[in-house]
Amino acid sequence: MAKNINEYIKKLPKKRREKIAARAQELIAEESTLQELRKTLNCSQSKLAKKLRVNQAAVSKIERRPDMHVSTLRSFIEAMGGSLEILAQFPGSPPVRISQFEGGD
Image (cartoon, rainbow, N blue to C red; front, side):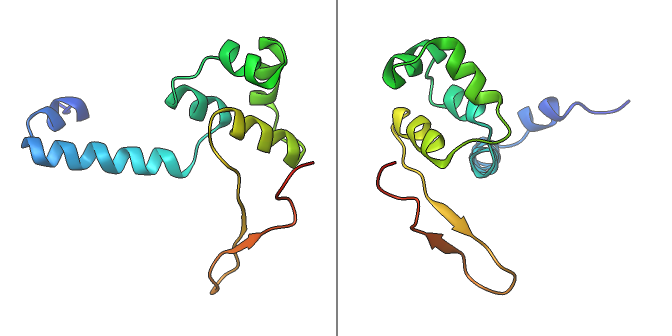
């Protein structure tokens, strides 16, 4: 019979389970949608809408967009208490921070 991953993890020592949970959170944090990020921060669409001075439906629409203005993304991230950095990555080189989009609209 196949083993369920959750059952397997429950049987591991506590320290190992904690290490697995921490690494899972790191991986989740490395790539996330705006909706997942908002939920991770325990922020509702309504609460975020108030901060952005838009309605809840507008927040929902932003979260589903595949493309948007950098200023819109910055406002969304800042309303959740974060800051936005844009990095360019090239093979064999360290990431380069793009500063052109910093500091307002």
